[in-house]
Length: 266
Image 1 (spheres, one colour):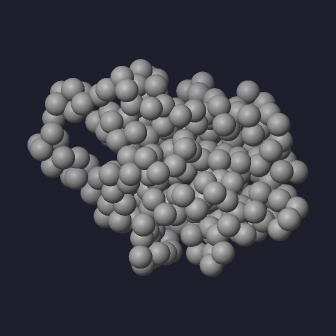
Image 2: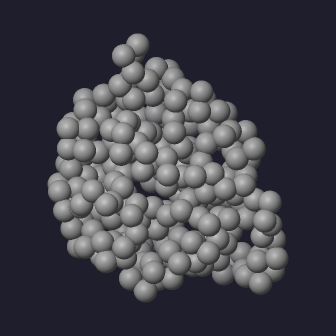
């Protein structure tokens, strides 16, 4: 790790120390309820890939280190409602507070307002965050391999399974992909953005996908802007996409989503 990614994780570790002082792991465990609704995230991805049907995970965030502020008047629930109405299949909610100005409360807020499954997108480095994710009603968590050891990844996947949370194992390069395959978890997200340099390479998903069998569900992440991008990915067997900035910056989000889903009316 280096640069911005390392700094984010260092700050996340400090933040967690303070959070645990306010509410311990044992105290947090007592908040788990059998009544918490679980929406199927992984099954949506499996269905899209199996049926060659494009599925967009629409990202909800106020800002990012690469783009700066994206939305000034940020109302995550309104964005999520618009996404759902426009045909997005799932949601990705940024909860990291310092660099993305997210908030974990946005998970339960959006859950109440939509019927879509929700990914908690954050920099998960501790089991505590997985428990938080369940309590705040996420359906899926992101595990970024570049910030985790193999032992941590295995522990986190197993704990997520206990809590009935789906996972996305995020990789960026061939070495990380080899590690992900050894974990034997079926959902892999390939980030076209290098989290260390923040540079984008759309061919990253296409190139790495060649190393995966059909047993894996692939999600292409970052830098996807046009219907031509989607068609290029489709030609290589990729149908699941995590898309943020190009949707959030669009003046007509509904039209943009229709274009990216390759709806003929657009």
